[in-house]
Image (cartoon, rainbow, N blue to C red; front, side, top):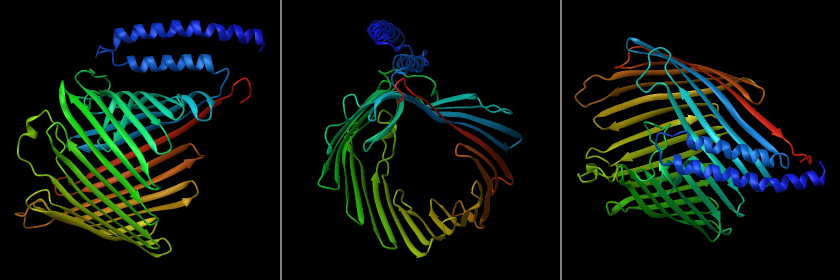
Length: 447
């Protein structure tokens, strides 16, 4: 390509970009406030990607990676039979990358399902789990996310249609903020009103010394026009050569009371691994409902775990959980052996008016480098209430096989059987096919 042609092309690009973004702004102003135009954000993202590929693809390499998944689930419920397919796609498109740490990319995860034999009222269903643009390195040390995404901090989590900005101010100080509208669980295909269902949050974190990370967190979520969730708090993660400790405190700013205290510690040395956790928190109910006005018990839970290496891949695994949530305390414990490709353990649970004792095991056997056989079983005897004199039996087994074709194709077939006091005979079958894909195109300079 000649220099004269290059200069002409580069001079025409600003005028085309100006016209394009002016048109995009008018479309945004007209459609963003319309809740029925739920496809608008996706259309806008694809338009931006198309323009980015048009202007920058001749100069820089583009990459597309992802997977296509097709699943089929067969089961019976009462007098009806169900055949439910799940079709999904995950894709990551790098449209522009002038430098290793600077790029424009698009990430998506879509899933569609229905029932082929006996449809529910919600069928067919389309889920958009991820669909966002990511701009990295502008400015240096930053990441900007625009679109549908999952956001999380120590103050809470949310699934939003919006904007997120993460910035590493220095090696020790990091800044993270986000805002948008909450995604509806019943109508995930729609973009909700920002004024009625807004979500906003922020996190500031600072590294103290070598291994201590201190964070300040804030999150607010609205529902039906009023504040349903409002948390502020801090967390501290500390660690040493053999130990780690995490502490978190959250305050309910909507109802003006302490919301949560969490403390978790773990210790590893030679053949031992020991961990413990204490969690005290209020129930997760919206702050704009009557449930926040009634008397309630707070969750108070203790968790302990101990692992001990015995010989080669063989380990002793024990777990214990105690719940102080109700007047009648409940607890559960397990004791077992784990051999890497197999596990066998005994589990016991007491509380909430019932008892449960069971034997649980699984195995995963590699028959060939590309062929695996796996199985699991759960046999238990239980009582759902104290007045029940006789114990009920429960049996659950799974048997499956998985075949890998190369590095990107996987086929799985699985059968499940369940029998208990409620279901006399429940047999299910599951099939899955996954195909990965990867494409790359190089710029004219050969990069």
